[in-house]
Image (cartoon, rainbow over all chains, first blue to last red):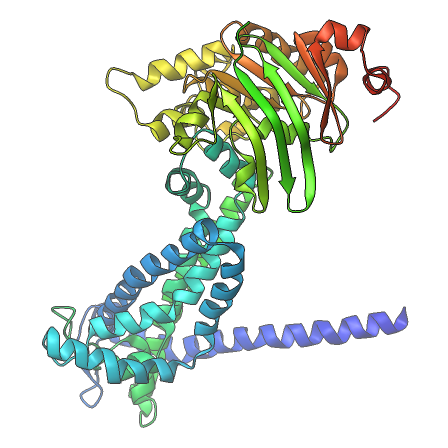
Length: 286
Length: 251
């Protein structure tokens, strides 16, 4: 008994220290970044794309647009392919094949992001440059690479959501004469809707936060992109590229970029959590 | 005499397990036929043969013939969607879809394609009236079906099948998740529906079989032991095993 209590205490301390890491990071980046946003003013910080650290101009609009463009592009690719894979795996695939395919897709998550970036640079970038024009390093290249990187997230959470749909629904639909595809789009996707939405939003969070692969293929130009073939710099790339030599207000401005990113990611994750909670409450029981 | 569904020397195997042994049965139209027997005797399996639901499970092998209106349902080129439209099924636990009440009823219509000149709301109303559910749900057609009581859910599932105008209704222990009063209501409904549909019901409940059915089949360990008029099966069975079962010596 005494020993149990002691071990419980130790474990609690360990858990709390991990959590305190989160709290400390949050406090730290807000403390370092927030004052600069307030001094610069919301308008000049968020709504200006004039980023000139030497001249003390810290407008991050082009990077916000860059991050969002790349994220939306990645999700357009990742959601279509990820959901498609989830549908194939849960509805159309013999169980034997599923047990091979699903671990393979999950293996994608284990590939280091620099490898994705490298593959993007040597394959996708030249393809875009040669066939579609522009520098190749672009929103499109970043979207494709990120779209592949978010596949494991989108696929495995969507698979879980589709598998959680009671088999009785499926049987009821088939017994009414529905084909597998009718059952899938008329019933299964609706029944698993909130889980699938959560999968897509979590995928967006991952795409928004990814740094290394994006730096390598996005081109990192400080402009608002006019087309998917233009290069962009994302919020994450900006921090990673400049942190090494930034000092003073420049450094603070990078922390402020981090604050912005942090808020975006928090919004995505809380939305995903709220959606899956709501569905757990509503779809529960039978 | 008319026959709606007929099996001839039907054998079914789940892998190596011989689940149905030489079952030969003839089911009359516009009547209620009950299949009774202890758990695991193959009665649900037999029922699921009639709309070919067994083949959704891997490793099932079927030998012998199953005829609907004299035509083999395993023949080449049969339209499985059409077969399942003609032979509808109601499950043991009510399984309304997580959609609105109206969308549940119209589901089958949408599956089979809404033909010209058919008004979906009319079919929904008609199907809900057929199960006496209309008055209870007419104001909540757009609310989720899962919010209904279990009995209402089961009525809804029956309405959902009726909406696609089947000829046969297969019911797999449709009352086992319901209380006795709700069971009584569903049984009344079955008697009413038997005027139009051929109903085959699998039940554990022998009183239920004797109350609603005109013919009864007793199964044991995959074999059809005895089949005949319900009165005969319950009052004066020819087989000793049937007598033991209906008088409560088994199961």
